[in-house]
Length: 394
Image (cartoon, rainbow, N blue to C red; front, top):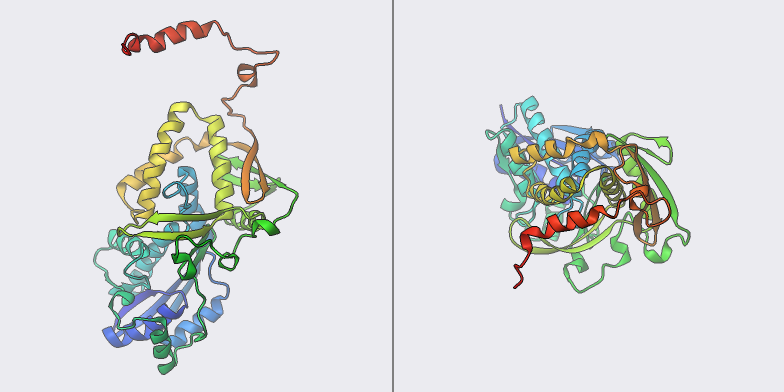
């Protein structure tokens, strides 16, 4: 009886060639697994393609709800942005794939798992560390690190020779990875750090020149940290994300262009789109600013940076990351209320917020009539605050 390998399968050129290559190189039966988290439009077509490529079985699972609830929501609570920008869309998706690769490998009694990541990128780390954390007994195969193909054209020739169903046409100049939290766009002209990304590189967002001239306001309602309503309509979390992608994308919201420090040590120029992520991260941050105290908020920023780094580095299942999740979730019961976001010309700005748990008092903050703050208290406070430093400047 042949051994089995479970391949994380996207249906693209690399993983389609990998099915045949794995069968020949390792003499194994290939089981394909595709995680539907927003990037697979036609499940039946993908299944037929995998089987035609030589797989003995396919798993195509709609994991958007799990992805939103168990991966994106903790990231939202953490205000996770790698190096202050990237909302980590691809980085959140990879541990989900690793989790299900392991589960299917157990179900199929497979000895191997495989993926289509390159030896230069971050995704190989995220998947492999995830798999090894969950089950170190599974062996991992990375065809793109091993096989003889040096160019896309060589892969196309291999596919044609072995009748592997791929679209052997002129390739898009960009490499795109998409899920409901955002899109990562790489390669082609984008590798020149001086060149402005052309409009044809973008998928989810309108150019500023084409966005509506009149701003749009959206009201997002949170219950215990979870966005549950948009403009009064209750939606599941995954539906909220997809809806905001469409609405905010029309206003050009959520474009990122940054030089990024990859895990393996090189710098890369990365272009991202994440309209819903930008809106929800802004809204949740502003609501939390209203209901939480200063020390918590200032300390959280330090932990948020560490959290984003750990997710980016593929350490989703590590003890420290789990502990940080517990910290960020501990006070979400207070994060209940509404936030009004103004969408206009590529920006998502908070222009209003309210909460029953608000620590903001207009009577204390105002400089107008009705000021309830006792200004005489400031004199004693300032004497005590500055006492340790008196004379130190001499």
